Image 1 (spheres, rainbow, N blue to C red):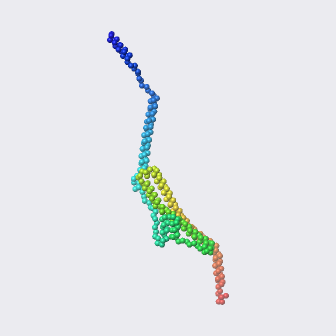
Image 2 (cartoon, rainbow, N blue to C red; image 1 turned 90 degrees about the vertical axis):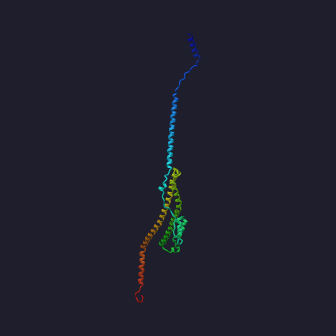
Amino acid sequence: MKSARMFCLIFSLAALLAPAAHAQWAVFDATNYATALQEFGQLEQMYTTAVETRDQVISAYNLAYQMSQMPPDMAVRYASQFSSWTDLAAPDAYGNTAAWINALNLGGQTQALAAYMSSVIQAQPYPASALATQDANTQSVIQNQVGTSELAQGTTTSTLSTLGTIRSNSEALAQKLANLESDTYSTDPSQQSEVAVLGKINTATLLQIHSQQDTNQILAASVQQQLVTQKQQIDAQNRAINEAIYFQQNFPNTMQQITGGVSNAMHSISLSPTGH
């Protein structure tokens, strides 16, 4: 009995002296969880976008690198040799061809005029006093022939100047073409970039335009020479027509003068021994 009481006392004291116990429970916040999931989704999308961007950058770089590479055998496969202008040469036994050759090699109106004066027989001016004594038709023919000679001089000197200028510039043009060809077949990546290729395309276009301009000048000079030749043919034809018209208009009077003169001469002839 005493023991039971002692046990109850000790249990009571233990219960009184023991610290107060507090229960703790976990709290679930659905709003924060939803926000966290949303942020995680955004981070995942950002990562996916970053990976795709990286892949695109790498792909663009690889394409640019591939486009900047020139096949090493391009020059061997496609490079070609073309004819080029050469300086003209000719004998000069009597000293009248050197100026002509000089004009064809260098160009310039002064050189062309000197070439014409030294290599072409010059037409002498028709004396004014002698021209004044001719009839109108003869004066027109003489003046026309002098005009044709002057036109021939102008077109010839212009052609000499044009051809000489083109020939003298041909060496510089050939060097530019060689530079363009070298850059085109170069394996240097800087020469095969997009900007470099576009620059070479523009350069090639400009060189082609200048070459076409030279071709047009040569064709124009040829046409000028043909015009002078055509003028000479027209002049000869027109002179023949004018002479035919003159003959038809003056034939009756001419024949009348001839027959009248013959008749008078015959009448003046006397068959009498005495001369009467």
